Image 1: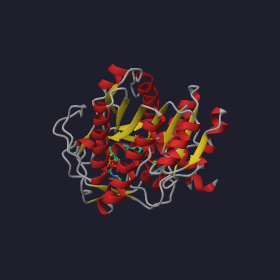
Image 2: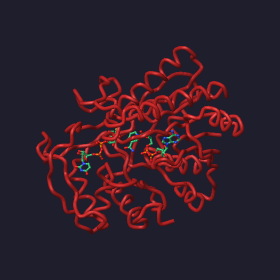
Image 3: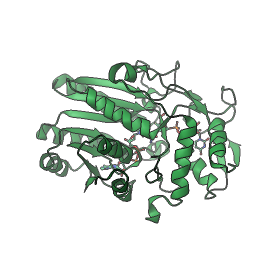
Image 4: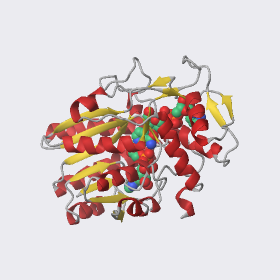
Amino acid sequence: MILLTGGAGYIGSHICMALLDAGFDIVAVDNLSNSNRASLERIQPICGRRVAFWHADIRNEEAIYEILRSCEVTAVIHLAGLKAVAESNVQPMTYYENNVLGTVRLVSAMKRANVKTLVFSSSATVYGTPTYLPLDEKHPLRPTNPYGRTKLFVEEMLKDLHQSENDWRIAILRYFNPVGAHESGLIGEDPMGIPNNLLPFVAQVAIGKREKLVIWGNDYETPDGTGIRDFIHVVDLASGHLSALSHLKVPGVLTANLGTGSGASVLEVIRTFEAVSGRSIPYVFGERRPGDVAICYADPMLAEATFGWKATRSLTQMCADHWRWQLKNPNGYRGT
Ligand code: NAD
Ligand code: UFG
C-alpha cells in the first residue's frame, strides 16, 4: 500500500490516477487546505477504482502513524505542503512549520511504523538563479525565498536521515513547471483565488474569467524578452514518480530533476494556448516579478539514466489538456 500525502492536490491527484492505473493500492492523506475532495472522487469513474482517503494533517504524527499502521503502508509519496512563493515571503514561519516540521513529523511516524521508502516532492526552486544551463543536479543550491529554503532544508534533512539509518530508500524529485491536466478533463489544477502561476491564469483569461494577463517583464535576455521555463505535463510528472518508486529497491538517496529539458517563453505559451483554444489571450507587459529568473530549464538526463523516465508530452498537448479541463470545469471542483 502506498500513501500519498497531499494526495487530493493538483499533482497528487494525477499521481493517484497513475498508481491506480498501474495496479497499486493507495491511500491519500490531505488536510484539504488547498484542495477539494472532489478531485479524488472523480478518479473512480475514470479508472474504475476508488481512492481511500483520510482527512488528516501531516503535522499530526499520531494520526499519520495510525494510518501507516492500519493501512499496512510500505512506501510514502510526500507531496503535502504549501507552495506559493510570494506568500512564503510574508508568512515564512507558516511555511517552515508546514513544510519542514510537517516532514519531521511524517518521518517520525514512518520510523515508528518501520516504513522507510519515501519519494519527496522537491522543486527546481532549490537551484535559485542559474549560474549555467541546463540545470543539472550538481548545480549549486541557493534558493531565493523561504518556500525554496523549506524544500532545500527537507532535502538536507532526508540526506542526514539516510546517513544515520542507511536502510532508508529515498527519492528526491525536483519538479520544474508542472502544467496541463489529465486527458479526461475530469481532474486538473484548481487554484484558490487569483492564480499565481502562468498556465492557470492564461486559462482563466481564455475562458473570460479574467480580462487580461500581465506578463511580468519583457526585457529579459531571451529571444522575445519574456521569461523561459521548462513546462512539464503533469501526467508525465506523475509517471516519473512511478518510475522513481520502482527504482527504490535498494537503500540510498536519489536526487533527480523532473523536467523536459527544453524551455518555452511566456509569449510562446500564450501563442500555443491561443492556437489550441481558438480564443484570444489579451495581455499587457508589466514590471518584472521580484525573484523571477530569466531562464530556467532542466537537464533531465539523470532521471532517464537511473530510472528510465523521460517526459514525452509537447507544449501543445499541455495547453490542450489544460484548456479541456478549464472548459469542462469553469469553476474548478466547486461546480461539483
Ligand atoms: P497543491 O497545493 O495542489 O497540493 C498540495 C496538497 O497538500 C494540497 O492538497 C494541500 O491541501 C495539502 N496539504 C498542505 N499542507 C498539508 C498538511 N500540513 N497536511 C496535509 N495536507 C496538506 O500543490 P501541488 O502543485 O499539487 O504540489 C504538490 C507538491 O509539489 C508540493 O509539495 C509542492 O511544493 C511541490 N511542487 C509543486 C510545483 C508546482 O508548480 N505545482 C513545483 C515544484 C514542486
Ligand atoms: N508569469 C507572468 N504572468 C503571470 C504569471 C506568471 O508573466 O500572471 C510569468 C513569470 O514571470 C515567469 C513564468 O510566467 O516568467 C512562469 O511563472 P510561474 O509563476 O508559472 O512559475 P515559476 O517558474 O515562477 O515558479 C513555479 C512554481 C514554483 C516552483 C518553480 C519551479 O510556482 O513553486 O515553478 O521551477 F518552484
